[in-house]
Amino acid sequence: MTSPQPLKRASVELLRQIADHDQGDGVLFQPAGRGCRRLDGSAFSPRDETFRVPSQLQLITVEHPRLGVWRVRLTEAGRDYVAQANERRAKHSPIKGARATHTVVDEAIR
Image 1 (cartoon, one colour):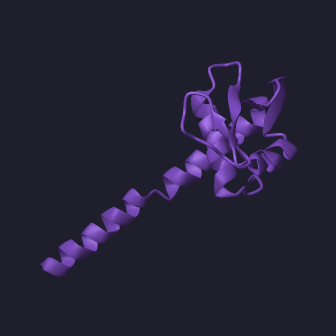
Image 2 (cartoon, rainbow, N blue to C red):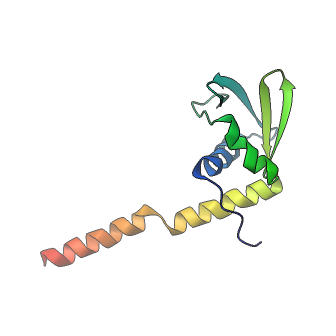
Protein backbone atom coordinates (compact mmCIF):
# COMPACT_ATOMS: atom_id res chain seq x y z
CA MET A 1 0.00 0.00 0.00
CA THR A 2 1.25 3.48 -0.77
CA SER A 3 1.79 6.01 1.95
CA PRO A 4 -1.60 7.31 3.14
CA GLN A 5 -2.63 10.94 3.10
CA PRO A 6 -1.34 12.57 6.28
CA LEU A 7 -4.06 13.33 8.80
CA LYS A 8 -4.02 15.81 11.65
CA ARG A 9 -2.94 14.40 15.01
CA ALA A 10 -6.50 14.59 16.32
CA SER A 11 -7.77 12.41 13.47
CA VAL A 12 -4.99 9.86 13.93
CA GLU A 13 -5.73 9.73 17.67
CA LEU A 14 -9.43 9.23 16.85
CA LEU A 15 -8.56 6.24 14.67
CA ARG A 16 -6.30 4.80 17.39
CA GLN A 17 -8.97 5.20 20.07
CA ILE A 18 -11.57 3.49 17.88
CA ALA A 19 -9.13 0.63 17.17
CA ASP A 20 -8.31 0.26 20.88
CA HIS A 21 -11.94 0.24 22.09
CA ASP A 22 -13.76 -1.59 19.29
CA GLN A 23 -14.86 -5.10 20.30
CA GLY A 24 -16.15 -5.90 16.81
CA ASP A 25 -19.38 -3.94 16.51
CA GLY A 26 -18.03 -0.39 16.52
CA VAL A 27 -17.85 2.15 19.31
CA LEU A 28 -20.45 4.65 20.48
CA PHE A 29 -19.88 8.38 20.75
CA GLN A 30 -22.31 10.43 22.85
CA PRO A 31 -22.81 14.21 22.62
CA ALA A 32 -20.45 15.97 25.04
CA GLY A 33 -21.29 19.62 24.48
CA ARG A 34 -19.31 22.38 22.80
CA GLY A 35 -19.21 20.49 19.51
CA CYS A 36 -17.56 17.39 20.97
CA ARG A 37 -18.37 13.69 21.18
CA ARG A 38 -17.33 11.47 24.10
CA LEU A 39 -16.29 7.88 23.50
CA ASP A 40 -18.45 5.61 25.69
CA GLY A 41 -16.48 4.29 28.66
CA SER A 42 -13.66 6.77 28.19
CA ALA A 43 -12.71 10.40 28.78
CA PHE A 44 -11.70 10.78 25.10
CA SER A 45 -13.76 13.64 23.60
CA PRO A 46 -12.82 14.73 20.07
CA ARG A 47 -14.53 17.59 18.30
CA ASP A 48 -17.28 16.66 15.83
CA GLU A 49 -15.23 17.99 12.90
CA THR A 50 -12.44 15.49 13.70
CA PHE A 51 -14.67 12.76 12.21
CA ARG A 52 -15.16 14.57 8.87
CA VAL A 53 -11.89 13.85 7.03
CA PRO A 54 -11.49 10.20 8.14
CA SER A 55 -15.10 9.64 7.05
CA GLN A 56 -14.53 11.33 3.68
CA LEU A 57 -11.40 9.20 3.14
CA GLN A 58 -13.48 6.12 4.03
CA LEU A 59 -11.27 5.25 6.99
CA ILE A 60 -14.36 5.12 9.25
CA THR A 61 -18.09 4.64 8.87
CA VAL A 62 -20.54 6.60 11.01
CA GLU A 63 -24.05 5.34 11.75
CA HIS A 64 -26.75 6.98 13.85
CA PRO A 65 -28.51 4.23 15.88
CA ARG A 66 -30.25 6.77 18.17
CA LEU A 67 -30.78 10.50 18.15
CA GLY A 68 -27.44 12.17 18.93
CA VAL A 69 -25.51 8.89 19.22
CA TRP A 70 -22.90 7.88 16.64
CA ARG A 71 -21.70 4.29 16.11
CA VAL A 72 -18.27 4.49 14.49
CA ARG A 73 -16.37 1.62 12.89
CA LEU A 74 -12.94 1.44 11.30
CA THR A 75 -12.93 0.24 7.72
CA GLU A 76 -10.20 -2.04 6.39
CA ALA A 77 -8.46 1.09 5.04
CA GLY A 78 -8.74 2.63 8.52
CA ARG A 79 -7.10 -0.41 10.13
CA ASP A 80 -4.30 -0.24 7.55
CA TYR A 81 -3.84 3.48 8.28
CA VAL A 82 -3.58 2.87 12.04
CA ALA A 83 -1.05 0.08 11.47
CA GLN A 84 1.11 2.34 9.29
CA ALA A 85 0.81 5.23 11.74
CA ASN A 86 1.90 2.93 14.58
CA GLU A 87 4.89 1.75 12.51
CA ARG A 88 5.90 5.37 11.88
CA ARG A 89 5.46 6.15 15.58
CA ALA A 90 7.68 3.21 16.58
CA LYS A 91 10.30 4.19 14.02
CA HIS A 92 10.46 7.75 15.38
CA SER A 93 10.08 6.78 19.02
CA PRO A 94 11.41 9.25 21.59
CA ILE A 95 13.26 6.34 23.21
CA LYS A 96 15.76 6.39 20.35
CA GLY A 97 16.40 10.07 20.98
CA ALA A 98 16.78 9.43 24.69
CA ARG A 99 19.34 6.71 24.06
CA ALA A 100 21.28 9.05 21.81
CA THR A 101 21.22 11.73 24.51
CA HIS A 102 22.53 9.29 27.11
CA THR A 103 25.33 8.28 24.78
CA VAL A 104 26.37 11.90 24.28
CA VAL A 105 26.25 12.58 28.03
CA ASP A 106 28.20 9.39 28.79
CA GLU A 107 30.90 10.36 26.28
CA ALA A 108 31.04 13.90 27.67
CA ILE A 109 31.59 12.55 31.20
CA ARG A 110 34.49 10.34 30.08
